[in-house]
Length: 619
Image (cartoon, rainbow, N blue to C red; front, side, top):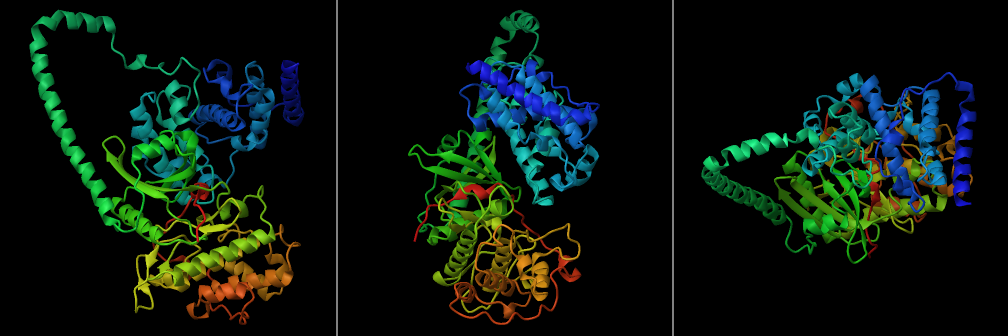
């Protein structure tokens, strides 16, 4: 009866795709999915007792093999039309339906939205569609080209390729912060273009595409690197008697040199670890983990535990032996000195502060070796509800008005603690929706203190290197590097407006008013306040209170520093304890040319990545 049901479910799914494609009978899929039946992938990942998440990841990798092959043949990332995508999805599922060991209903649920995974959208990864556009926008990729060639079944080569891919992905994300598909562009390019063995090679499929192989196939693909055994044996036995002594001497010399080299390299790595740990204040009480503890918790930083990519960090989920779930951020960047500074800065600052609306640090780790180089890790509690950005801009998740109201208040309280609850005051410098995390009760935690600065007593402002995220930086800081507590207030105002409108800070499709402050101000001045609110909460909350939050957001995000309230005043306005002054006119719209021409270094964060770190609530 069970087998009959599986067969019937598969038949229904195929029939559905047959009907949807009936108007496109002449559209032929350019991808040959024969490999679905011939390639030794582990079908048990989608078997009777398989988990939905594991099966869906496997099917995406299997589908990626076809897309990488298509890229190699046509120089095109993804398919150009919905008709071709639908045709290929039907062909892919038809091949899967012939495999008796798979759970048909599980496969069908995994492929419900796979049509989007096959289709090229103009907004995907900075608009890259072809190899030529990749070469223009991604530029030269020597590290990726070198690391992802050859036999990927070798662990060292695979790890090197993965690290290079993460750096390439971070570069692409900086070009397209709102895209979530740059990671796939990178792996398709590595498997289809860089690796000369192609995506159907066992090593490429397993290492680059992440496709699990069937048991018994993990040691295949080595024949290309083996010498002819008969020739080796004849050579060895022919000259063994004459050269055995010489080989022993050479071997001894070699071992001595290797030992000396490793001793010197070990001293260099130990010096790095000691140096970084020495830069962290000794009285902060931070837990220093050994890298082996983190490797065990994350299963060797395996791809299945990869949960996000940030501006300069890769995030993995892990579980300690005690059962506590953690998120580990590995800081990745070539600018070692800058990363050391930001790493130590975050450890120093977070370790000294405790507040229920700030993300505390669970621990940290630094390590160094020849294989993986210098590494820095920050450890937090895992937060299953992700970031505010995830919920605001993913229409599958809808925040209610009470949730948005509480989140805004929580962020204000966290910032108020940073500005007034600690001495010297701390300026965060990177307040944005991706750095606001939500705990299990949907309460907000301000995260990522890598750019935070401490104030100097007696000085009204700090002059410092500009860093942060475009759109969230106040004009006086972006133009002149003048940092004050009002800088965080400006960023907080942007967060309020994003939360109330459900719109991102920068809308490049709106050429007249691309910045959210200009858009909301124009609607507010025209007394069209109703149009400001996100449609999901438009009919939920009291209009007077919602209007108050918008006005506080506009006041906090005013271009003139003098008109902005302090965070303490903003919190009282939000809670209704004090009146909101009349909103002053804005002397210059933020979309003005003078602000767009500012030349400074921005640090942009990924959407998915940091959004999964969390911390236990305290104070």
